[in-house]
Image (cartoon, rainbow, N blue to C red; front, side, top):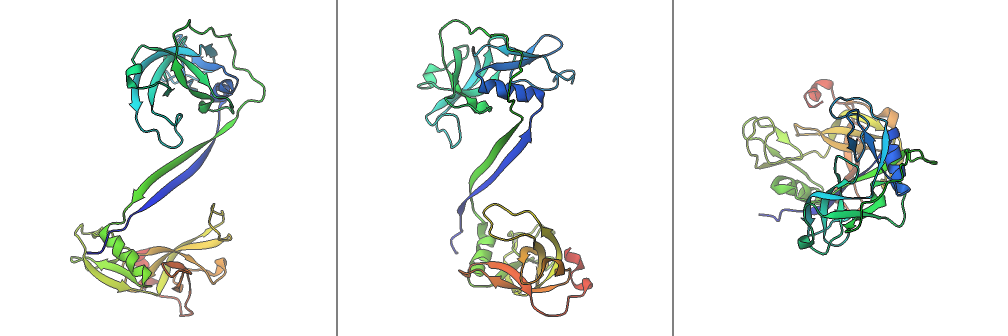
Length: 313
């Protein structure tokens, strides 16, 4: 049996969002070393602040400053910090109810070990040396045995308010394509497209997942398909992707390879984007290293009849 492949993959998306008046004041306050909460109609102070009362759904705008000191309400020890976390050395995740607040704020606590952390311990904010208006302006919390901090009574009005943030989302993982897709990838290295046939409905799936999506039974019979195929549907891409050296606009299409019963994805090249159409007959143009089709180009054949591919739209 051939070795099953695996490779590290990263999915990353920098999410940009605008801020309402409450979140804007909260993050701007952190930049200025001020912690703000919001007061509800029943007199509770919520930190971090929210824009609507979680009980009544009433809009909240009454900002109030709380102290940079507080009490740990619960915690968990982080033995192995990951990239992007507040501290590079082991630390505790803590919920801290700041003095003057009625809810707890989640952040990191810098402590020498789990034996130094306990529910009820007193802590204070350690501010980051450089602040930009983000939750990371609080570098972490640290143990504290002094008097409670005294808020200055800030009303939440600042100059040069923070109006938006970029929240990076990233997932690092190891992907294994499994037996069926490993065979598919190995076939591509030989400039062959290999699918698997369902023993029940006899449909050929490319790339195969190792089971028929219709019948739910395992597939093992391998079938070579293509290399030519038919464009079933397509879209025109007008936004240039980061780190992708392809000029826009370009066309990305579903392509039903000859002999397959499932269309796969592929880029269409060698033809103006506005001349791509359903039924266009195409063939692969392999990458420079010959490991996969870089794109598909027209074969010059007459367009396929709609009846031949309508079931694969």
